[in-house]
Length: 197
Image 1 (cartoon, helix red, strand yellow):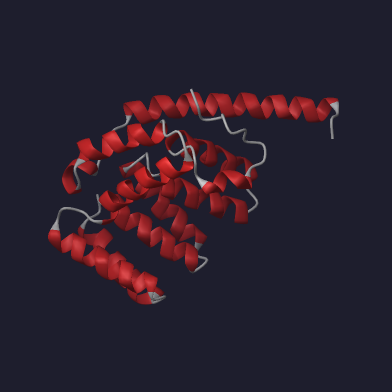
Image 2 (cartoon, rainbow, N blue to C red; image 1 turned 90 degrees about the horizontal axis):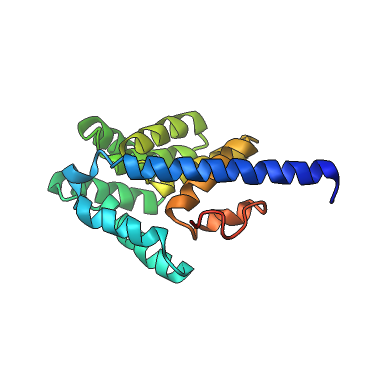
């Protein structure tokens, strides 16, 4: 509906998205991840994130994203990598309680490993324990502010809780990092070029 109120709302939304986008770019440039140097090749991740931000197609972005996830999920520390492999196998086979037990041990022993928190947040989400999932997502983003997976997870939780504005804010943040996330389709008000500079 094209009414003055609708046009005003649309203009306000575009202004808010622009402001959020500018702030996110500043934060992402100024806030290097805390965990990367300890568990992964942080220089390689930095390069992949730079490539992801300017990817020219969804296929290119998906390829870069797979590489990022491989760094996140397979840390250099052998004991931690083995535990994450066990957690992944438990999750893949639907053994959520076993997966949660493994991830509880991971975050207790490696509290600065963001993907341990992220995987546990995922399990909590699958168990409909949104409060615990959101708490873990906060930990993920404190350690790795570029974690578009955690941001996307929070988007889904906020939408299920009816918090559209919070979900939109996080979606814009995630798209500033990974401009081809499929969750973008949940927000018709986001134009394709919203995250491009």
